[in-house]
Image: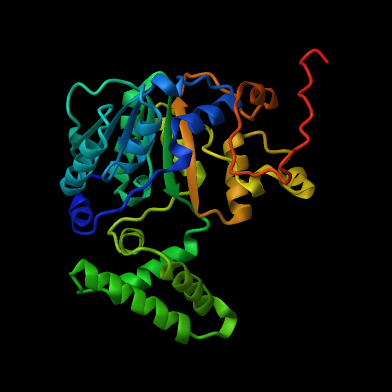
Length: 336
């Protein structure tokens, strides 16, 4: 984080976790599908911007002992907490730095993977631009950046709800009280908002259900931070382009995107511009959140995934055989 909001993260620490899509293994696999040859994760260098207490990169470091990791966050208390956890775990391939994005220490080299999860949309526009500048500055020639962000059109209705929550908690300074009041307001609206045309009550009921299982730190940083700027995908891609980056692809395929109905494919068939096509996909599924992979603008790549790249990948899944003696036929040779 940066000094503009590090105070709130010190007051309400964000309990970070391992982000599967941001693991170098997954990023490299997705990039390969789009013709981008990324660095071998086993010996890569990784930078995470806005690492909180470092749980994400420490999980990676444990699985990739030959790689090196640097995490940066403006919330000094979170870095101190993470450093204690890092030392206890004996992870010598991790370095955690308390620093503002605008004042990163000298000597940070280029990295094969740069990660920025849950940060971009929660910054003022000029600092969000700085994130993209840092991605370009610190990316190695074949490097990949992972950036996640809230998106329109899915966040359109959520912005209205968030504005109402902000009105309700006006004048409440204590973060714990703000969270409690936000929950109370959402519950009140879910119970008593006018049902005619069904808009507010349904939306608040859905939000109330979601927040009932969400930790306080999520409620605070998603709905009570000063900044939460959803963007249209094409805006994000344009900003990346202005900073010398290009869109590689998503960090993972969703079931809906990967299995479009024939009529949807037909409707999109005439769209040659990939960015425009993906923007229409967001329109169609009312997408609220994206995880995008970026590379240097000059790095080679493809507009669409290539199926033959799958031959070079390994597959892992949480799966169990339906039989204790599965009947697995041998793989055909490439010449058959």
